[in-house]
Length: 125
Length: 125
Image (cartoon, rainbow over all chains, first blue to last red; front, side, top):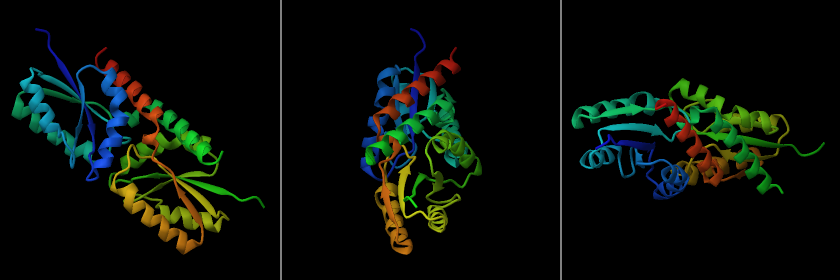
């Protein structure tokens, strides 16, 4: 059986359930395009990264990439998430690679510019 | 003198100064393309929205659009920011419009998909 690799699209999470709804819509094109990818939340929302990793291990996954759907890396991505990943690797005997946040790719800055220009044109036709 | 309209690109802010550096790079194409636009932070980083509005009023601006560079709207954008905006409108006798966050535009979800695919290809050539 070939090694299966799981992609975790990591979002922050929010106490506001509407946030998750917007976020799921935002992540939907990625989830559709990237095989074995799923959204998980760092805190406040479910599924948590713990829950997703535990289920994936049951399903036979041994390696993971965590790809943060964050605009920039702050304390969460520099400290909290690496610590959570280290704990998960030990607990489940798996390998988890943390990728840079999507916002560090210059293409995202260009896309934000286009969206801002569209939004301003729509509000001031 | 024509009415001048200020665009505030509102970011969350972080206790990590590197976050702001990444964020400024991410916002740079927008700041370059959109006249009279500037980044301001909701909390933890400077310039704050208060500081930007106060200076813009001195510079002659009377109307503003706050455009959140957030992926999704949670409690901050639904409650905290509207309350901050209402206070600023009263304090400075200005009009401030709050636009939807960039992440609510479907184009951003497609851009995120492209960036995620690029990132995964780069890590698994």
